[in-house]
Image (cartoon, rainbow, N blue to C red; front, side, top):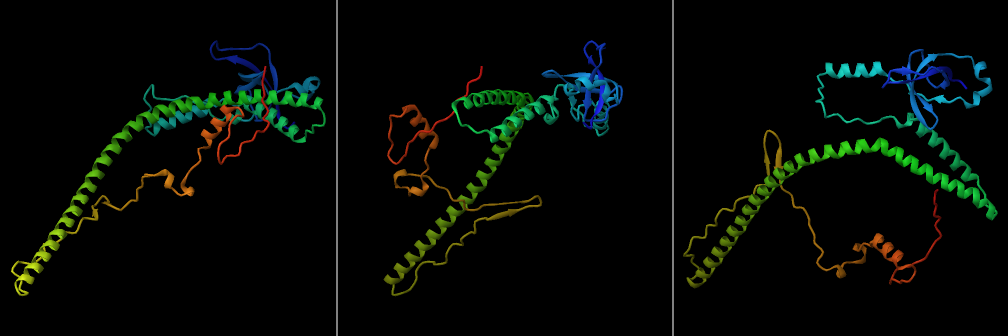
Length: 311
């Protein structure tokens, strides 16, 4: 098989005891006596200590096909973990007590995951080759469907074991930083609004001055018409200020641009290209009607869908 043949003794960290009996395994990694490893045990895994290595295969000739394999990466690396902890301390990475999240990594090394993958791969490959020519052949197909449903459930549950602690920790971290970001966003919004409000007041003043200058010109023109073409009022226009466009500082810059906005005020008047179909709502209504419904502009039909129940 190309794997190292070893013997191990199961052990318990709680009681600090080892089993009297030795158990034989093939190992994908090269192990040495005294190594602590995770080994497959029936439908689960357990911890063991290598008691013998390089066992001749002649000792297991009668039950060779039943010997389980210790997958790669099953070695419990106590020394490596200690080195990582030491390196973190040396780098002054201080983690306060109570702020650590315990997560499980490397699911690809989990014996259950590899076993489930092997099982479902066989089912998939067989399904591709399956040919149904009689009612009787639907029985094994149904058995496979129920097995697939069970494997799917097992995979989903196993995935949750890995994902849930990460999600829970991510959610708690997100709450903290979202609260911080809310304050940041509020400060940002207040300052942006003050910038645009000042810019708007400048533009309003420009419009007012331009209006006054125009009115003054009109008044002067009318007076000149009544006074034989002579101007009797001061026609010098008020200087129009230039609204600020951008402010530059040593740390950066800020300015304004015109951003297009829109609001639909008459949905019926919208061109068809801009109207969206609510597919989820349509499907819900059609399903609830149980075949007794027609909707203008909608084609409704029914297709067989396989339902699988497990026991």
